[in-house]
Image 1 (cartoon, rainbow, N blue to C red):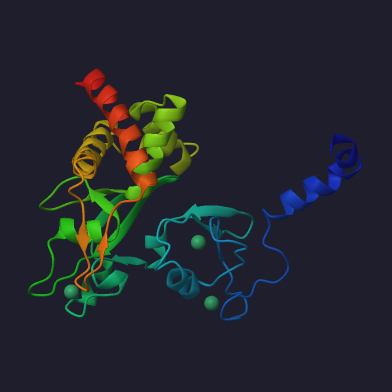
Image 2 (tube, helix red, strand yellow):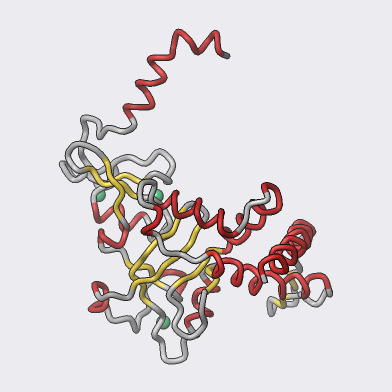
Length: 255
Ligand SMILES: [Zn+2]
Ligand SMILES: [Zn+2]
Ligand SMILES: [Zn+2]
């Protein structure tokens, strides 16, 4: 491999560095609007330049992606909420019919901790008369709330799982894990990202322990109303058991 690569070293570097530029075509790769391609997603596969509207529309189902904005000389990080993005809860992520869009630009900010960073979004809750409570709307979106009545922070389920594996396999503490997330969110000023590692431990313990106990007791069986039932897979049971051991070790060490 090394012998093959050495003559191509400059070409490799050029190919990688060219990804940092905007290229010669500045039109939106989605709607083809000319001179409008100012945004690029670092997480979408083969993401080309997008205009503001297409970038916001694309990320309705991928709200925890890192967006870059072209400044004229280079790409810099920009939050989706700065482009007018609103994260909707309830109704499968679509806007609630009872939601008043006049609130789109109000200050309802919400923090979500995901595997590769901390994201702040403006949010719109389901406001239907008999709609679910906010904590339930979050769980439906696979987000674990940090508080019950007026949640302002949540952890993605995959982040809790990722943290469990990281701790189990690499011996990472909650504090180190959050330090890494802060650095991933803001490489140069991680201290500006305010998320608490104690909060992570509480969520992790609260979320997973009762689930593990129910699974181990064999009392978890979800009825689908059509005569069929769902039970957790062997893989999930194994993972939960590993995580339980880990959580108990962390929790007793921490308390
Ligand atoms: Zn467009
Ligand atoms: Zn994306
Ligand atoms: Zn609703």
